[in-house]
Length: 475
Image 1 (cartoon, rainbow, N blue to C red):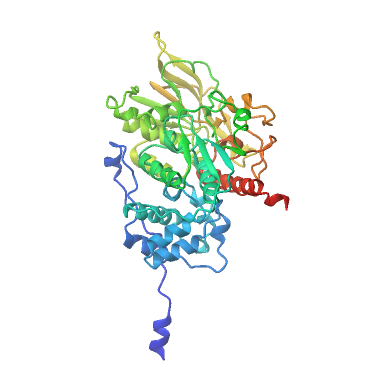
Image 2 (image 1 turned 90 degrees about the vertical axis):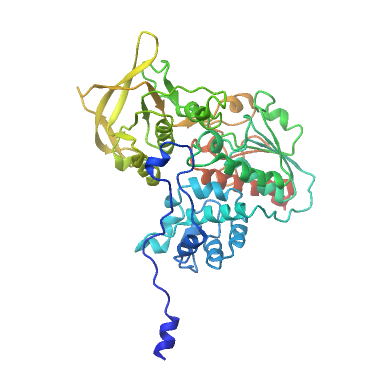
């Protein structure tokens, strides 16, 4: 009897999550290849076995696209890896992307019951594994596509929100045409996130899945200039605007017009989308300064600072007006940057860019800060220390303090309500705008946010659009 009880006893759970192999800092700082190498099947199974398979999983409540997290993890435990990706695809089309760049630690993983006493299950790493395993088999399963409805939908932008809408509506039988302003797919996934964090072949692979659902993509088509939203309405039954937030913010300090001052958008686009790091193989020259200062503390700032090192900078600085505790970037990205040698200048605020006689940046005048009372964000407000001025030498400054939607579509669309920050105003639950037959979602509505939140907005919009197109919301 004792032996029988012992046999039924559950195996002890590993309190720590399984580490993911990655390149050493010394190796990766010299190349643009992906830093994290992913789980082997054996490591994935070990991590998946840590999942408690809760009857009422809190993790699902934290997922903007409502993925059955215990369900896809259970398939990994069973070694049914194709079954795992099938569960994921019931709710989203970008698993390989989300598994790499989404902040699971702030969404699903933070609600993991295991995390109350141990480290939470590494949901993102398992999601990435399932998607990469499917790709390694060279065969992508296409879901059943409903009978054609005869309805045509235009999707503006091929970023996360647009891809989600296109995939969801294509499966439901609608004809989808996507319009992309650039020459490649993916939006911010392609131009804003470096190769070492999100390989571009993976973005193309994920979007190729959407094309296999029958979606048509038209490139080099600038909606608002080539043709307006109002004009497109003449040919389509509904439109979704997922044009992102491509208008960068600057510090608005003297000297920002000097050569060597970039927005993070321009800096990363030159390197990522236009392959500046492979010049002259790709005809996109990019200056390789010896000292780079990146102003900001988010994931984009980390991407910029780490990119500068890979382009050969001797010094790459993160200049942030608060302390390390207030950094908005993912902890994983901060730690990777520290390992690679990025220098963090906390409690520092640039107030002037300094140039030489030829109009090139040579430094920034800065103030030291101290933290005061919390502001509206809940973080302690940075307060300048009088007389603490000093000059930081640098040949390039990258402003990475945020973005707004490009004003082109708002300015050229009649009847569209626009918010005070230039964002399109849309219903939070449906994505419906003030203009009949037009929905919007993602960064063009919220301002710069996460990939998974944009996908969540796309999912809600697709649901609402389908109800409209089929007349279900009139029943």
